[in-house]
Image (tube, rainbow, N blue to C red):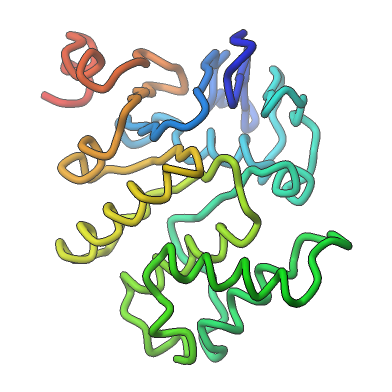
Length: 240
């Protein structure tokens, strides 16, 4: 286990009845990097994310984040430590304004240090990072789908995560929206480590510094993007 890693996963398994979806996964992710996870459908990518942020419990193994064993912690407890998450489908308050949505998210972590002035500052910074300041007074339902995806990321940023899990952030976006979001993610990773699942390799690969490939619930390759892309087994099961 790497002592200076942001996230260490060892022997992680998840079974649903007799079906083992994640099988003895061992992997570490470094601080300050953009990591991309790819793999065929059914490889276990979203299940892996659900285990990392506490949506579902693991069957065995350990998850260590910033030196803390978070294996049995709740979603909220993990968020307070700095683990953020977005989902494949955005969950937003459609009838509220953009500003109201980010303020609700900013006030969610129960911390006595988060006074109203601090909440507003955090919310404003999140909107700036995601390019939504000009839309702050608009109702969410009036936003384009791409803008709603960026708003979901803004909500996650209000928890001031050290690691942000992005589950298919480009899904359903137009090409121009994908390119805009990719620019935002690249800027975001200057201060927040990013672990991303993405099927659009044309956009995802240029963003990635580190690439991990899953197959049947196991890590089959992980390392620098260019090295992994040349791996014969990776090309056989996924890219060819």
